[in-house]
Structure formats: structure tokens, C-alpha cells
Length: 372
Image (cartoon, rainbow, N blue to C red; front, side, top):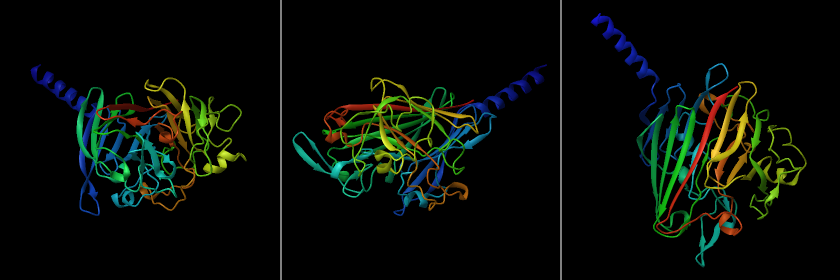
């Protein structure tokens, strides 16, 4: 009897060990300067898995189930570090200090004009020449109830890419047992500055490299968006989505109106625009839902941010060799980048991205996966 009981206990322990959330660390490669880059793999009790590297805080892969339970990797990425070192599309990366564009790389703060690095023609884009996507973050696993997590940290020093103040950034990726990828951002500074972080993963819910995303059904909880000029700099207007190709208040195929002869779509070569999320910023609320009909996969986006950039992979061109030898063609993925609005420092009517000395900023975004 005792022997039988011990055998049962061993089997139970083995079963629990296989189903609990877990993490592991390994080496992914070295930068050109010889700096080691680590790879963290997080797995939840359902077998959902995500892989994150310390270079750029890049989300390398995210495997989630379809309606039959089959797992597939739904984010674009690369198998080798070298491809990330040479990437110009921000694939899977953390973006900072300031996501999106700042006109002419200039802004005023406390009566002083600051000049940032310009890397998008005459404008500043996604943190500059060497933004948060091109640095090696420090990492450590974190204990999370009901999931597995890794914390990344980076000190952006005063003057980096033209920004004032020493900015301490922490980003915690958590893979929960509810099949959520939760991203918490924490910022502090020793001097007044501006900051606006986001995550720049490219999604295809049919699986990375498996065709275009034009048939994905999208709903965005936004009654307005921020139109831009030809250089993708916001005009300052908050324009209603009603009666425009930007109305995703009901489930609509991404490709349903993307080719319409409309000025804003021409400027972005498709969708590359910020939406003003309904509800009060600072509160976690649903920003979007995406449904992929062939696999049944559903992705919900929840955020505390005031805005979200929809980008439909308009400038992917098949020139980059992705994971498993797949190439990523035009519009083979979409991005939903939760953020403050583009060029916020130059528009007083936009939610402010100013972070004061001694202040703390914390934001949260959740990508929640299911199937139907």
C-alpha cells in the first residue's frame, strides 16, 4: 500500500512539473562589440510559450493555440542575432525613449529647445539612431503568481540621442496562465524629460510568414484618430473615424478598405496611424480585438495608454529572411503599438509625455489570446 501511494505521489509530482509555468535562460549570441545577448523562454501551464532576448528587449516568438489546440508562432522574427543587429523594421523590439515620430527632431521643455537625432528623413523616429531597440538590456527572471516573467532594465544616460536626464527604464514581460502576454513599463528620471515606450511586434494570427493579414477581422475601440501630413507627422487634429476607412468600431477585415483612394491611406501606403482609444487613459481598458477566421485565433489588446498605432506592414518587402527560412512580404503582419500620440511634445492638446524630475511613470499593455 505504501509503495503504491509513493508511486502515485511521484506521478502527480511529474504531472505538476510539466504543467506549471516556467522559464529558462540561454545564450543567443554576441553583439559586434562582443557583448553577450541572452534568450529567455517563458512557458505557461497551458504550453503557451514566448521567447525574449536582451538585445532590444525583442519578442522573438510567441506560440499560441488555434481552435483545435495546435500551437503556432504568431510574431515575425529571426533565428540569428545578426539579423536583429541589421534590422531596420523594429521587428519585435521595445521602443524608446520616445515611440513614433517627433517633427524635425525638436521639442521645447521648460523654455529650452532640445534637438534629437534625426533618423526618418528630417524627423526623429522611435528613439533615434540608437534607440532602446538597439541596446542590450539587463535581465532577471521574476516570480509571478499564475505565470512566468522576466524583467528587463536599462539606464538611458543624460544626452543619449539628445534627450535630457538619466532615465531608468524597467520593462516586465509576464506570460500568464490565462494566455496573456502582459507588459509593464516603469520609468523614473533625475531631470525633466519626455518618454513614451511601446512594443513593436508584428503579428500574423495565422502564423508568421503564412500569407497576408488582409483577411484578419479587426475592431478598435476608438472614435477618432490623429491624421497626418505626407511625412506622417500629426496635424494636431483629432478626426472622427465615422464615414472613413479608419472606422473599425465594428469587426471589419483589415483589407476591406485599405486600397481606397483616400489621402491618409496614401500618406501611410496603407494604415500607419494612431487611434485615440476610448475611455480614460491610465485605466486598463480594451483597445482592440483581432480575429483570424482560418485558425480561429483571437487577440485582444488591453492598455492604460491613450493611443494605439495600427501599422499594416506596408513596407515589408520580402528582403528579410525570417524564422525557419520564411520571408515576410508586404502586409504579411500588423502592429498594434500602444502608446501616447506621435509628436506629442509639439502638440499641447495631446496627452503629455513629459516626465518630471523624481516622477514615476507606469503603464500596462496586455495581449490576450484565445480561439473560437
